[in-house]
Amino acid sequence: MNIDNLLNQAKQFSHSPVTMSFQESWAQGRTAFCGLSAALLYTAMQSKVAQGRALRSLTTNFIGPLIADTPFTFEVELLREGKSASQVTGRIIQNEEVVVIQQGCFGNERASDIKVSNADHHQMPLPEQLIKLPFIPGRTPNFIQNIDLAIAEGELPFTGSASSHIHGWMRFKDAPKELTDAHLLCLIDTWPPCVLQMMKEPVPTSTMMWNLEFIHPHRPVAPEEWFAYQADTRQAAGGYAHTEANIWDSAGELVAISRQSVAVFD
Image 1 (cartoon, rainbow, N blue to C red):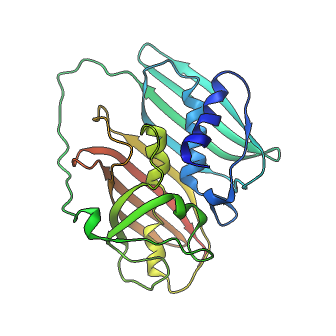
Image 2 (spheres, rainbow, N blue to C red):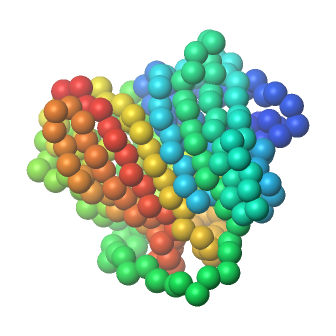
């Protein structure tokens, strides 16, 4: 089941309540990988927002595991819909428990004389020149079989590296029909937390909070294009790590800024 099949099920929430599930091929351990659960809930929330309002920011808290092959539902509340902005909250409910909470801000573009161009750029080699992360059953998360990752800097998880950053490229192996913000939301979270490469053996980790800001307007992107990703650890101590990442399209245009808080049980 590819990403379009899953997102299309979540879109049906605009018409009536939806009960859906996902397959083990999209799991990370015993739960959906965070990018998938965030993308599905965002899609359900977007269906309740005035048409044409772009996603400006999205904050997701992962409360508990979202289990594969087990039905779940959505709850969405439109907090406020003003002339140009909408504030929405959403929940994923599985086995009568809240497992994901999300708050999104959607807004129309407004006329403004203030313009500041992005000054952040990357100098990474093209993905065709880089080593691709292989899918190894039983060793890499199941969802990796759906994603191409090309690593430019940083190491694989649990290799005892001194590095705390990871840079590279990403795209869907099975390209969707069109690439929307929901697809990009799913794609951005496919990278492992930066600090995992610093550990010498596998340990449990859990993303607690993820904040994503989308830069608009951005140019249309072909579904098969690569996106550049650079994530750095801002601070880590006491079992928690805080990371920030920039995401560019293949033309070097900044499209999103990501921030995560990760719990590490080492």
